[in-house]
Image 1 (cartoon, rainbow, N blue to C red):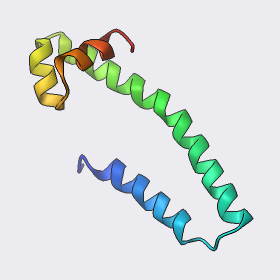
Image 2: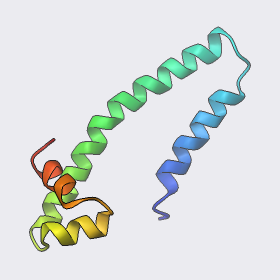
Image 3: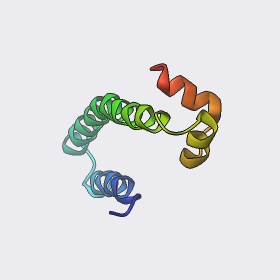
Length: 82
């Protein structure tokens, strides 16, 4: 699977809303999409934390940071649930 596929799907959803005629219907669609994004953030954070925790079993923080293009400090925060 293309690693950018989820981001492309999100961008497609945003563009679909943008293409709708303006007014109440589009505003409702935006509100629904924003609600879905808020819910998804928690899920995505948990998925990432689980993956980083799994990586930590075999890799050093620095190695994880390099693989994820994050700072070592950020990886440590993820592991601490921040």
